[in-house]
Length: 578
Image (cartoon, rainbow, N blue to C red; front, side, top):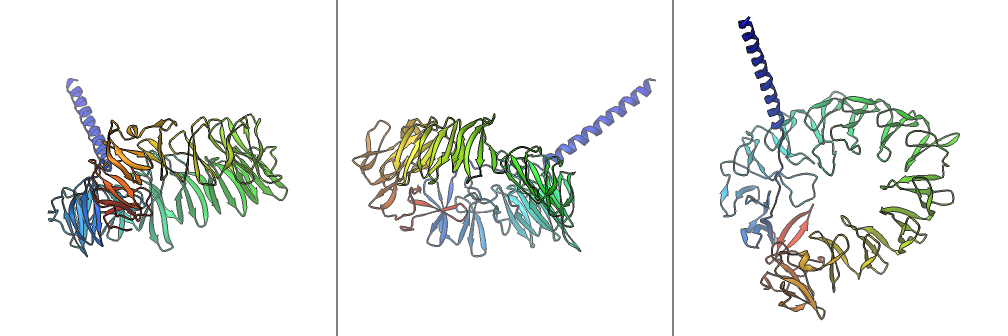
C-alpha cells in the first residue's frame, strides 16, 4: 500500500513537472515573439548638409562628421551610429569618426515605411550582407540572425517587425530575430488596424499564396496565428470596428462577399457588396441589386428588398417603388418623414436635426426631441458643453448656446476648437484671429497671427506681438512657459531684446523679431529681413545673413538652421539663402 502511494506521488510529481515544463515552454514561446521598440528620449545628433555633401553635428552645433559624404543615415539620433555613404560604399562611423561594425559587410539601416517622421529607421537593429544573403545585428555588433535571408525590409505600419524573403517566400520576424510569420507566402501585408492607444500593435496580417486561379488570400492575427486559410479572392479588415482581439474581415469567394469575425461566419458569402457604417455599427448589404442592412452580429434588421438605402445620422432611408421607408438604427420602422434626418452628437443631451423639405436647414433638439435651436441654419456642429457652431446663409460662422443665445457673433470666416485645450479660435475676413475661453469670453485678438502649442501652453503671435495662454485661457508670462531658460524675449519701442529672470537687459533692443530659446540653447533673431541666432550668453553665433522668407520661426542649432523635407525628414545647414 505504501509502495503504491509512493508510485502515485512520483507519477503526480512527473505530471506536474511535465505540465510546468509545458507552461514554461509556451510562455517562452510567447515571450520570444515579444519585442520592445526603443524610444528616443534625447536627440544628440543631426544630419548636416553643406552644398550637396552630408555630415553630422551634435546638439551644440559641433561638427562630428565632416560634410564629405554623398549620403548619411542616422538610424537613432540618440546614439553615435552613422551610416556614411560614398556612392555604393557605406561605412558605419561613431562620434570619433572611427569605423565600427567592420567585421560585417554592407551594414545598413532599415528604413521604415508608411511613416511621416524624422525618425525614419529601425532604432536598434541594422542589416548586413554576406554571400548574397542578409542578416540582422544590433548597434553594438551582436549578431541577431545569421545571413540566411534573400531580402530584409521593413514591414509597412509595423515598426519592430521585418518582412523577410527566403526561398522565394515571404515571412515576418521581429527585431529580436524571432519568427512571427513563417516563410510560406507570396505576399504579406498589414491589415492597417489602428487605435490611438496601441497604434498598430493589434494589426494582423493579410497573406496570400499563388494558385492556378491566381492569388488567394488568408488572414493571421497580430500574434501570427492563422485565422483564415488562404482561399479567398479578396480579403480586407473592417478597421472601423475597434476591437483589438476581434478582426472583422470582409471576404470574397467567387464574387460573393461575406463577413467573418475571426473564424466565425457573421454574414455568409452571398452578397455582391457589403459596406460598413461606423456611426450605427451596421453593414449595408446588396444582393441582386437589392439592398438591406445587417447589424454587427450579422442579423438582418432591414430586409434585402430596397433599390437604395441611404444612411443619414441615426436613420436609414430605404427606397423602393412604393416610396421611402425610414428605419431607426435598430431596424424598426418609424414615422419620420423622408425629408428629415437626425444626427447624434458626442453629448447624449443633444441631437442635430436636418430638415430638407424647403432646402437643407439645421437645428438642435434635445434627447426628448424638444426643439432647442430652430432649424434655420445652413449648418450646425456640436462644439462642447452646451455650445454649437452655426452657419448662416452667407456662410458666416458663430457660436450659440442651447437656448439659442449668441455667444460668438455670427460673422466669422472660420471657427475651431484649439486641439487639446478648452479654447476656441475664430478668424475674421480681415485675417484677425480671436481666441475665446471655455465660457466664450474673448481673451485675445490679433491680426495676421499664428497659434501654436508651446510647452503645454498656447502661443499667439504676429510680427509685432507675442502672448501666451494656458489651456484654460489664463494669460501667462514667457518666464512661466520656458522655466529652464536663462534669457527671455522683451519688446521695447517696437524692437526686440532679451532680459534675464530678474528683468535686467542682457541683449539690447535692436532686433525686428526675436524668439525664445529652444531646448538646445539657441534663439532665432531677425533684422532687416534676415536671420541668425544667439546663444545663451546673448552672442550672435553667425552674421545676420540668412534669407528665409518661407519660415516664420527658423530653428537653429549653433549656426545651422533646420530644413524639413520629404516625409518629415530634417537636415541642418548654414547656406545663406533657401
